[in-house]
Image 1 (tube, rainbow, N blue to C red):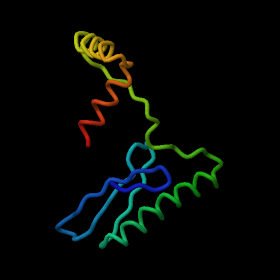
Image 2: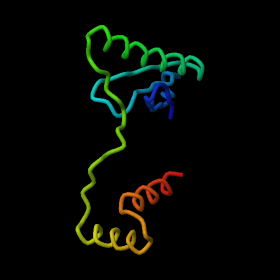
Image 3: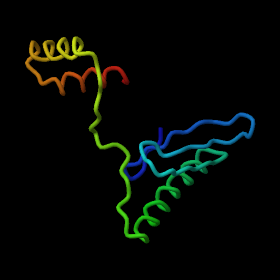
Length: 107
């Protein structure tokens, strides 16, 4: 994962072409970049983000942000109830409980 100016890039390696290619995630606009080395890839990522921001500025448009920190999740009502009950027993909000569980899952 790459980060620059609040944007996150996801990178994959193409073994056939011997090149890294990436895309900024979390946007409806498509921002891509590529490079043959880590340094080249980082420069391309930053350049693509900067180009996108300049393009938006020239057009008078507000650039999209990647992730707002808010998302809707559909779960079975029984699971919702169990999560809310567990959070209540711990003396924390459901949001805090779920955030802690998700953080634990990715760290």
